[in-house]
Every structure is written in structure tokens, then in C-alpha cells.
Length: 246
Image (cartoon, rainbow, N blue to C red; front, side, top):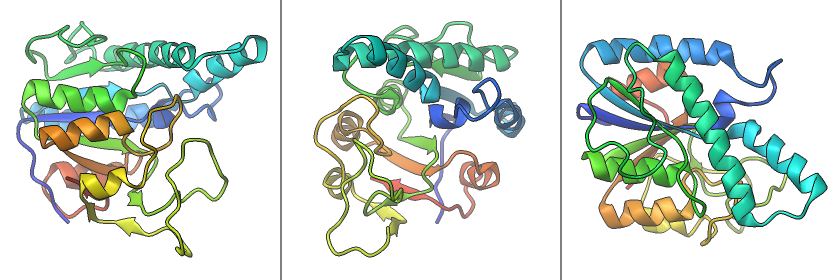
């Protein structure tokens, strides 16, 4: 399977691979070092990147700490998550400071055009994830797709994680093992996930973002963001492993 990109690539970089919480300080610095090394050759060839980063375990830790003390609303959880994405975003901006716009897009319309090779964006408002932000920025900056680079390697017909989690994709009846899709329509994809957004939802693309993408004609390419060789193949227009939603 192949995909062809233009000069602007929007990437929703999963917070779970930036801040998995398993490293000594929670941040996977080794991955970030490899990610920068992977991206820079494309930057030197003239590709512009918009990196929209999630909150990862950083958001979960703060949400869990607050919940242990007080009852939280979904809006409270979302705001904690948004601020976690902003901190992760500033981390990325610092890592790419030689080529990154010093202004991070933390609200729609913050930047009218892409000037620098790399632009960083965080969460904006409660009610959706950074998937939605990435899709909206693709619309705003004229990209025809977003890359959903998190832990899942594909969209599956049911949650590939055996342990049940709130917000995970609903299982398809009669399916003995998760089936990965190479391609799926937005209409079919939206039937696999909950209709409404809740903080911490585990679907590859959140319901609000999926609805926007379907309306706007934006594709999403879902792949394992940690597999940088496969990621490079995608950006080069070569065969890659993942799912195209469109």
C-alpha cells in the first residue's frame, strides 16, 4: 500500500509515544532523538510539517491525581489534558528549535500561514482530542490528509488490547481475533467507535475529528508512530503498513 503527499504533512503524534510514562522521567527521549533524526532529511528537501502532539501519560497522571482528591467533570479532565499537550508541544518546539516556528498553535487561527519548516500545535478546547486539531489544521492549511502516528499499527475491527478499557473501540460480534484494515471508509470507521467524545477515548481518531474529516474530505493514515522505517516509507511514497481512512 502506498500514499502520495504534497509539500505540507500534518502529523498527529501520539502523546503515548512521546510521554509513555515508562521511562525514568516519563519521557521517551530516545524516541524523540530518533524522531528528529528521521524528520530532518524531509525538512531539508522542502517538506513542511505540522506536528500536533497529544498528552500521553502526563495527562493521565495529573487527571488521576486530581480525581483522587476531588470529583472531576469531563471538562476538568479535558483542560488537564490540553495543558499536558501544551507542555509536550513546547518540548517538541525546543527539540526542533532550529527549524520550528517559535509560536505554538494553541488555538485555531493563531497562525495564518506556515512560514517555518516545522510548526507545533497542541490541544485547543474541551470536547475533542488532538486528532480533531490535526484534521482542522489540515483543512486550514490545505493538506488533504493527516498521519495518525500513535501506538496502533492499524484500525482494527475491534479493540486489539484484550483488557477492556473505557472508550476503546467496540468489538465486532463474532470476531475471534482483531482484524486490521488496509483501508476503510469514514462511514464504516465511525460505526466502530463511540458516537460521543469522552476524555481519554482510545479510538485511533476521535468521533469529532472523524466527523470533520468525513465532511471535509480529509484522509487519515493510521500507523505505528514508533516504527520510523515504516513511517519513512510512507512519506517517500513507498509501500508501508497501516490503514488509510477516507
